[in-house]
Length: 360
Ligand SMILES: [Cu+2]
Image (cartoon, rainbow, N blue to C red; front, side, top):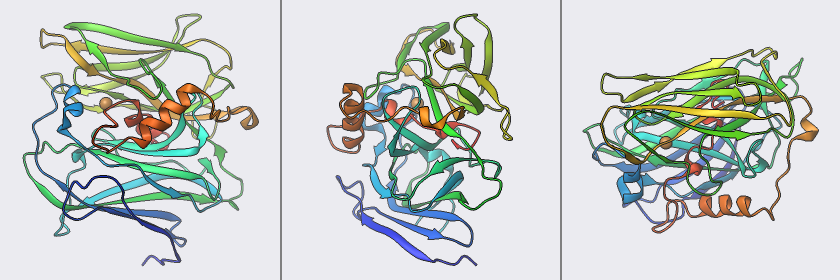
């Protein structure tokens, strides 16, 4: 049996009510199991029509929770998460009612973008993540985290009083040898930081690409991807040579609906896929849209994974004066409010969908 050694935080959710009962979030530490346990709920999730176009999210076809803030309490390394949903009667609720769950780390910057780190995430197409104890995301007590969920229930069944239980698994500071530092990396084909990352998909085959450089070199340890329906794959290329470095593939049903996006593990003992600092790379999303019409804002494509920097001291720091950083913060604050939020990059910024640990 778990031993509940301390209650770290307990607080009420802010923002407008989705349900008669305001959802609450509690965070507890289970030291014997080395788990941080987050309980959130209750959420009422009536069945909704399928989201054929992602734009439907903007028309209120999903419930966005406001961001729930708490502090990370432990010196160590995050190494994965497990997510469970149960209804009022304790019956399991299918994972697919979560369009996204995103954990933001306000205390660290993303590698590629001047925005807060997306520590982890989960969605319809992602599973629980656990990485070997040889790697982990370095975490310090007092790091400021925030979590939000975009629900979309199109299972055909209503769910009431849904409780979410998220276990975050950690490795203690005294592990010997210590884990290799592995931090979230997020590479999107069409991101405006603090804005949207959706794009239109024309009929037939199409591609969308984005070039970027990394402020510090290192090794990609594992990678996952995110695509919407009719997505085919996301690939990462060396933009200076054109060489394809890695690919994550969508699993599609006969209609082109994406049921899953693959993951790649390059080496949890630390070798990984080498990426150079200040070198041009390109992330490319591929779609094949059989509907015969353009899907307005219907697509997203990105890779998210774990990256081990050659020199942690060169990790970019948060610049609060950066306009893109400020836009990102504003979009996170606006989540779940009547006029704010929308469905943008904030939903997806996570390592979340990655393999190496999870999006972690
Ligand atoms: Cu999406």
